[in-house]
Image (cartoon, rainbow, N blue to C red; front, side):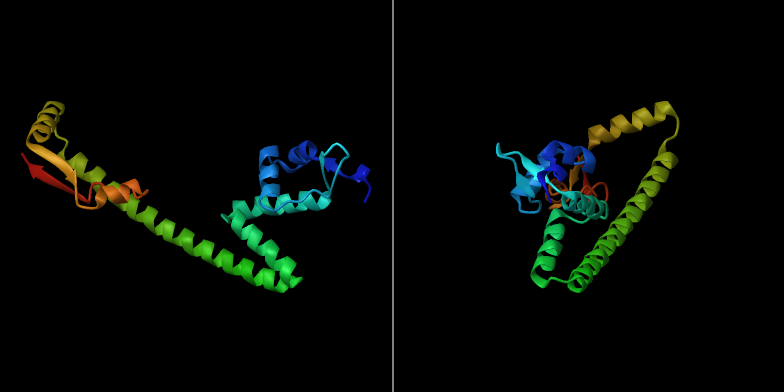
Length: 171
């Protein structure tokens, strides 16, 4: 392939819909390799780079990581056939489906909790003046604190700690 058929990194970025910064990162981690360089050091890429970037984008849309892309590419380079790559890819997809099912379960649980709390608040609302009085009274007479360990869970990204993991202490 002659250099006339190759494109620079900026053109690759436009055609692939990937930032130049991402392309340089992909090169840095060994995922993308320029087909050639000009005498002045500009990176030049071929159609294979466009295909690879299209594949990366599809895999990211499926929720797979760059590590997964690199693993599959390395497997292909080591094995030289698509059978082992296909088997590993299917296992990755199955794992992603399992994770999504788990997330859906957690979201359904959160939805149930929201509906329960919402209904509870609606039942206890009363008239605006009565609600304000109850609110002020509650704030003055109660300290609401998380149960032991709940805040550590919240700090680690688990936002499901409230309100089922709180204790109300009468003051």
